[in-house]
Amino acid sequence: MGDDSREIDRRRFLQGTGVAVAGTALGAGPAAAGDGDAAEAEMKGRRPDGDEPAVIAHRGFAGVYPENTVGAVRASARGGRSNDARVRGADMIEIDIVPTGDGDIVVFHDDGLAERDGGERGLTDKEGIVWETPTEEVLSAEVLESGETVPLLTEVMDAIPPSVGVNLEFKNPGSKDVRFAENLEGDALEAQKDLWRPFTEKALEIAAEYENEILVSSFYEAAIATVRETDPSVPVAFLFWDSIEDGLDITREYDCEALHPPLYLIKGTPFFGDAWAGGVEDVDLISVAHEEDRTVNVWTTRSWYEAERLRAVGVDGVISDFPGLLRFGSRNR
Image 1 (spheres, rainbow, N blue to C red):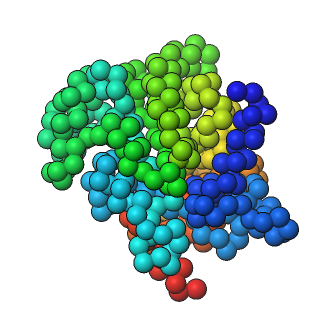
Image 2 (tube, rainbow, N blue to C red; image 1 turned 120 degrees about the vertical axis):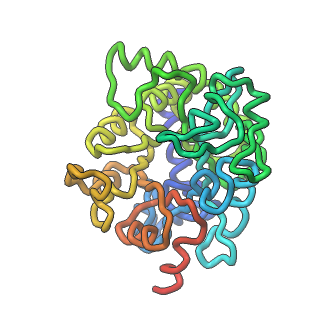
């Protein structure tokens, strides 16, 4: 697809649903022509002053539902697209995808079925590395004793209404050699892209069968690179880790429509720099992103206090473990 087609699609994504980009409710459409500053802000892919951030259900609101399951995405999609709704549904649902040993794509976060990093209890009642385990066994794994099992990507997509956006987070494509949150170049980048390409192509082929707005995010530069090569019309977001400048370098390299930083990289909040003893760069990431017409969706909010502080500094979306976190502030203004 050519650059002109990509730009048209980018504008459609930024203005059409507004989900996780402009920060308006899904289906609301862009601000009407002549609405002044609000229309200009939305044209630039960010929410106008006074507009609400988009609500992005992290793994299907993992704080209240068994993460990355069909049941979780169904539940998180239910409800209205306003903080005044009796039940606040997600504007977009974030899910993690990985391949099985047979090359099928499932919705799951960890490398291993049984044990998380650091020896914590695993998510399921099965053992093994997901990409080394046959599909049938992966799909039989029960998630958090919930009665829900690990689903195929197609099963999850089938369960999400077309009016709700989907943020596909690309996890490990099936190799212990992938490089996490690093800037790469030359032969090192090409080698990583070779690992990613089959997984990327299959995931995008599946996503293309659905009407939902799709946003791809990843901590891996090669994932973003191969999405751009496979279908430049698909909006992408780089997931920041510990460095604002490194994250911005990759974001600019691939002209990402959005960027997804952790809340401790958001200047102007009480959380800025909290996670790192050595501190982080003194950069107002929201201002920089908005000047470059990019959207800022912040992970992972777990309390109304965090959500309110992020709303106050102008984030476009909150990637949240819980529904309704913005309701308190919305009703007390």
